[in-house]
Image 1 (spheres, one colour):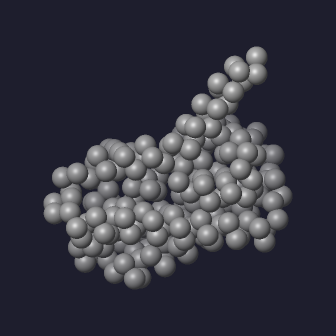
Image 2 (cartoon, one colour):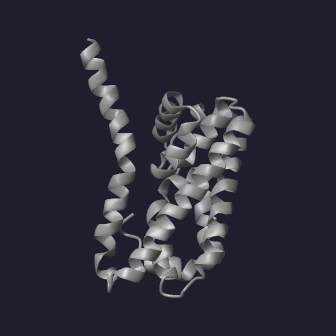
Length: 202
């Protein structure tokens, strides 16, 4: 992920290119390898410089995130168990699916919101919800709230830091690294609990 020049990527992709990436990350297998959190932050940063109109960008990205999750949900409902029988490829890793399953089992509907902030897991959780036959009315409520909150938080963070910190480009990699580490905390916490919780039971 650090090998990607995010400023170049965002600048070149434009409004609909960025929206397409957010859509793919929210509900397609390929989303597991895309830079979602850091992409939103960088989009906000470049918007603070006038490259994009933040008033247009944010609603567009919210729609892409919400529709992406809904597509992922539909894929999960249609394919169901076939997802777990699928062999690993360069894009699809069964481990991501299994991690999303455990996360969904533990947190239920809240997982739809929480997964937005966890790389890889966010791409598979909507599919798990669909495969588990979650009520779509409940799913869409969590989906809308999660999509709006995720896009607003990270895009506006980039926007306001871009406006207040001179030459923030110099600190972009450490900031993105920090965002990635923070986004991994919920998943690492679950892994820690699963590992050491079992030891305590034994």
